[in-house]
Length: 235
Image (cartoon, rainbow, N blue to C red; front, side):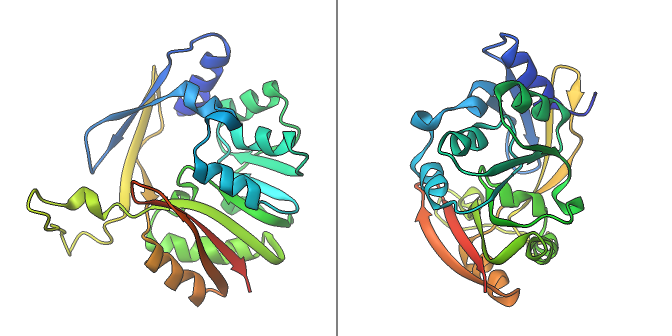
């Protein structure tokens, strides 16, 4: 297990490494860190957006990119039928240790023969689409995972503000593709994810894509830093 920084970090945290941090590199900004304890937050430490998303869950829920399982555990404690999905071996092990009842170690795009009422995608979970082209692929694949009238609850951000100049103007390279397509690399100790694509999408473009792929679109909440919670319902 050499390419599972999140998994290694959450297992270390469970073993007592309370100050563990995951380093995040990107092609857009300076290196940042994820304090691992935040991945284990309980409901009382969740922001308003996440609490609203939990309240909006209905029926059987697939928690996509569940990580250490904080949202799955919160839903489970509410009596919701939830399945946590993650590709990280260590994350899956940590969820088992914490008592998450239904856990799948699988890539979402390889998931077949399962139907849910809600796909939950917090912490910019829609980022797994990677690119705008990938978003179209995701929306079509999601149709195979949703029951009739099923919903996608997703968090994302409009990151246009990251391209603002000091005078308030915006500087974009029009030859570089959509500005919300970002590349990341995560490291923890000797673990490294390798560079991967991650998508941040502004709500108006998301709405256009959702409608063109047969979903309704509803903006449930806008945060203070460009982030938002949206609901897509399979029409």
